[in-house]
Length: 151
Image (cartoon, rainbow, N blue to C red; front, top):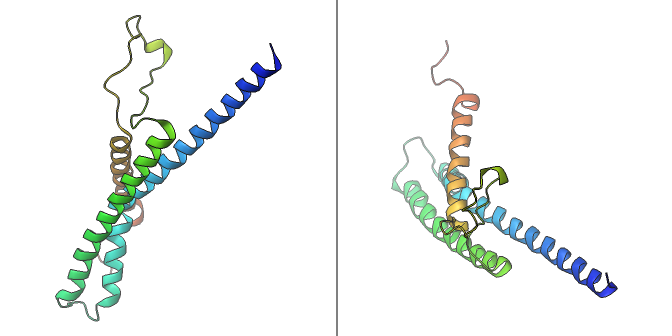
């Protein structure tokens, strides 16, 4: 092996590791932004409206703050997810996740590339919905407490 070839292999490996780390960071950022669609954004606006209300029966103002705030924040979050998707495409060169199967599940006919792979945004949205469902179930059964008053 020549010294040039070793350096080239090492440089390619380092570049590949850096690209994979950057793609993972972008994917996790997209996942956090998508998860906030179901959790942080609605809860945050309800909390803000609760601080604006001066009684248990407020006028329409706090309700409008919640509605308009959620709509505008969701639109901004969707824009952010789109920009992060563009960044993912620039880092990896594709907007699709690589469909991988364990070696023992592959047949001899699996030599052809997989055409039905999932896009990054689809994977992020599906994952965020599943995480939100797990968070809701965890909160409901473990953290919420009983709604029945105890005397």
